[in-house]
Each structure stands twice: as structure tokens, then as C-alpha cells.
Image (cartoon, rainbow, N blue to C red; front, top):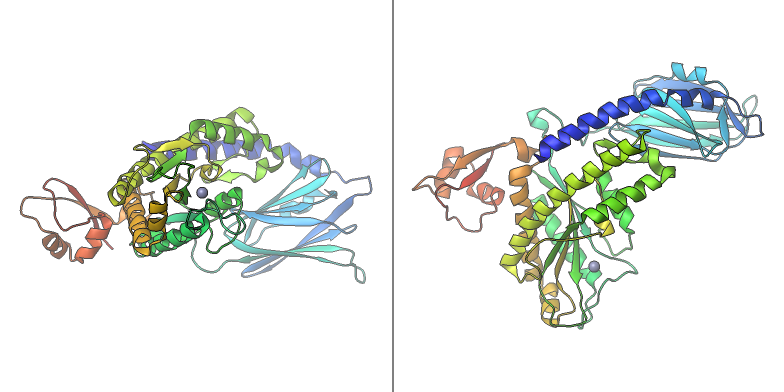
Length: 446
Ligand SMILES: [Zn+2]
């Protein structure tokens, strides 16, 4: 169901993007008119090509303030020039290279020029401004260098199946200590310790890779955390916290997913941010479509689907947390936490225990309990991905299903598939080697 919906979304958004670029065509000619009001003009654009690098030189009538940033899937480089116009859009047609598919321009904020380079692959961009020299005036130089190494996106070939990426977000940090327990324990330290332990065991699990959103004691804004998860192409974001309540008897773990109202207000907010609209790309949903209604529908669909997945993962993790400690609420809670608002990335927030409860505070400080928590979280994630690994991942492709028959032992099944028992155990989050007849095992194949 989820997969179909995502495919539908992908198709829909790619159709819409197609329409979007057609609709954007008239903007080009508007940008092409030169500015007669003393603003800087781009007089010419020159290109030079090397095997792994393309250099664009913008000849300018004066100095310019510029900024650039990259967007992914599809790969683009966006260059913004303050108070600048383009003299002659004709030059754009010539600008192709091994790295450069094409170049588009548009007007921003009435008098700024936005240049979008459509790229063939991920690049390392750099830019610098040259002062006038000899016959040359001001020049802005943009270099795009091909990134070596393999692409991180899914690859169809069996050999290149990617890992499921888990972004681990240690709550708080730096000058934001989070809650502080009666023994003086800061939430920010506990969350980072658990995050590190979790990363270690996720990285030790075949087909999975963990990345820490915050790896040191530093302050990070919530939106920055979401942005990081996007940059990582995360398949799941887990935000780790510890709860606090005035009554020190409050206890147990809770799991949160984003609420629909939180998602709806977030999509409204994003769409209201006209300024950044063109820059917004959330996974397979491209929000460049000129029709506000269509954008809203795309974003809502995406957010609702993401919430479904988040609740599903949250259920699995809560189940596992219940095995290693108390649970505060028996169901996954929903709230409008900002850190959960990453469209297209299922996300859960874990309140691992009450740091305001001295008993639980002591537990949270113990490395043994931290390890138990980390293992429980991994088992929960594992149980989810065993059913719903994203297409193109090793987990989704490289496994067989085996239904346990009477008399089976884990050792015998391992022998049969020529696999270490430990691989089967990890893959199926098995705590003991006891098997239940009729249950399904995932068999990892390489
Ligand atoms: Zn917190």
C-alpha cells in the first residue's frame, strides 16, 4: 500500500514537474531583458570544459553579491545574483558539458537573478569573484567538479543495493541541556550517549547504516536537524529524548509520531514561505509546481503517508521498549513536534524514560541500560524494515523467506543456507534460538 502510494506520488510529481518546466518558459524571456536601472548586468557567459570539470565565467558590468547552493534528485546548482539582470539569454543555449545538462534563469525578488544549472551528476561546486583586470571587468567564476566515488541513491544492480539509512538525532545539546534530573544529569548527555550506542549496533547490522545528526555537545536548531536528515537521504529518523514531569513518580518510555494537524500546519507554513518555495524538494515530491492547490495536495499526501509509516515503526519500537522497561503510554502518541516534520522521512521521537524520576534517572545513566534501550530501538526498526524495507535496498532485495517447520533448528537452517546463525538471529531480531513452527524468518542472502 505504502509502496504503491509512493510510486503514485513519484509519477504524479514527475508529471507535474514536466508541466512545471513548460509553464516556467515565459519567465526566461522576462529575465532576458537587460536592466536599465543601474543594476549589474551579466554581459556574457563563457564556458570551458575539462574531463571532470566545467568552468563558467560570468562577465559582469559591475561587482555582484552572489550565493550558491546545491539541490539533489535531480542534481542542480542554484546561483543567486543580487540586483542583477541578464543581457542576452541567447548565450544559455551553448552551455553544455559533460557535467552540465543545461542552464535556466529566472527573476527573484523583482530584481535578483537566479541561475539554475541542471547537472548530470552530483558535483562539488565552488565560486569566486574576480576584480577587473586589463581588458576584463568583474567576473564571477563558477566551477563544478564531478564528485568521485559512487552515488548514494538506489542503484538497480544487485551488487549495488544500498543500505537503509537511519538518522539518529540526539535531543538538545550545547547551551540547551534539555531536562535535568534530580541527580544533576543533563538530558543532552544521555541522549548523545544512547545515540552513539545505537549507531554502533545499527552499523553492525547488515544492510543498515546509521548517521548521527548531532555527534558532539553542540546546539542545533530543529530545522537544521531535519535538513541534515534530508542531506543524508535518511529512510528513518529517530529522535532520542528523556521525559520530565514535576511529579517525580512519573515513569516509563513514550514514542511519538507527527500528528496530522502538525503535518497540516507544517505544509501550510512551508507553502506560505514563498521565498524558499523553488528550493524545496522533499524526496520524490517536487514542489515547483506553479499551481498552489497541486502543491498542497502533493505535500499533504506525502506527509500523511509518512505519518502512517512513522506510526508503524513507532509501534514496533514501543513494543520492544516495553520488553526492557516500563512504558508510559501503551500507544504511539501523536504531536506536532517540529523535529518530526521532515516530509518523506518517517520519523519517531522517543522519550526513553523520565529523567525527573530518580530511579529512572539512575537507569538512564547506566551504560548497561543504555545498551538495552539501543538494542530495543534497533529491534523495533529491524522488525519494521523486515516488512517494509525501501526498494533498492539490500534489506528489500537480498533476503529469502523461510517458514519454520517442525523440528527445525536455527543451526540447521543456517547450515542449509550456508549462513552464520548470528546473521539470521540479527536479521530477525531473535532473542533466543527457539523457533516457533509456522513463523516466518528472513534469510539474508549476499
Ligand atoms: Zn527533550
